[in-house]
Image 1 (cartoon, rainbow, N blue to C red):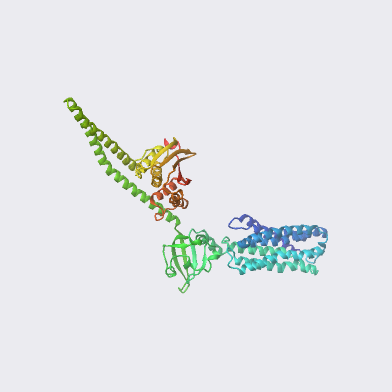
Image 2 (spheres, rainbow, N blue to C red):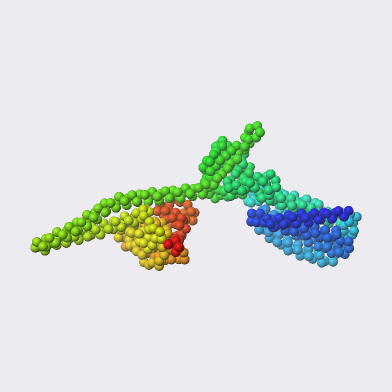
Length: 592
């Protein structure tokens, strides 16, 4: 009859195995710490029973049996902890109740171990074990041991009825309720009721509770798509690892199952998706989905009105007779592809602008060269004619005519040199020629952007470099020039007549920082900032939408994103604005 000792021994093994796995598997996605706490309690409970079975001395058996009340008193609070994880809405309240119950249970269990009236003696039974003779303290503690498990079962029943509760899983709540009921039905009679009636039976409390907890553990992880020991678990695990969303729907469009990826895309939990109509989530008629689609682009409606671009493919599921019984729908997230499309669109526009600017610069450069050559020739011929007239003794006032003509020619040459400088800047802007290996001089880059930005308001707005605190070179000179040109043009356009845009250059750790200030705007700083708000949205979302962003600022957003730089815009007065652009510098080795 001593084989009855195998009952607590098996309970110890079950508790140790499942408790160890629960500790090892605990993570943010699989919160199994509460389950490991339950297995710790059942393991201690079974260990006390096993040590009692192995004792031949009644006094030593009584010493171990005094601690038999502590684990049952702690199982109930741990059940509340598990229930709080199943029901996030009531998780805070249940976690608080679990903490209070654990403190009270620990105090009562330790007190019962040292109280003299807990167990009055031990009686040897015919099957080789010991039966305790409970005293008044134990009779009072017996209802307390059942109090928190019953409260947990009642709470689980409420969760099962309230299927609207977000994040709750009523199936797991049902499993917990059944496990608690089965445990109480077996454990209470064998642990307390029959011994009080002096009927000797094996103690089955630790064994039953550990087995019920193990079954609940399997159910919890199975519902969380993490247990790969059943065909359903294998299928769910494979679907959970897919990068695409997969949904199984009925012919009427009701969702039967959805993998974790689709739940993440839609912003809902898998349990919340069950029973919903797929037609309400996508912009594709159900008739088209049921006929079979292949990479059909649409939009998936997430929570809070967010639409996600997706590619939708569907396939009919048929029974053995060929009748349609459902549809498998695969969703591919196209947000990254749309972002790449935006970058390609921006790059294409930049390339088109570059080609156009290079072509214009080339066409303008030829007549400018001819005009400059002719003006230089005309200047030399005018000087020769003036000299010949003076040699012939002509009057001085006739020679002054040539002086005035020479002055006009020099003014024309000065103007044509400015035009040639603009042409050179446009060619550099269009990447028609580079600065060569070693990077660009930041001051030259800013000066080139200023020369082009001055064309916006001519002499009405002054653009100048107020200070230069950088001696290093940068390897993104052309890109920085395009960024500064767009920003300077916007500032010059919004400045008052006679205003000044001051620019400072400095080095900040590994970045070049360009600061632009304008203190006399034609409109308020708030209105001017509104033009740059869209630019901030583009930088934060890393997207480019030409329909909502003016093209110049769209280029700025794309280039700053590509360079890994930053942009800060702030109002420094009612009609004053400050912009700070930072881009990475090159290292000394890169310049050699």
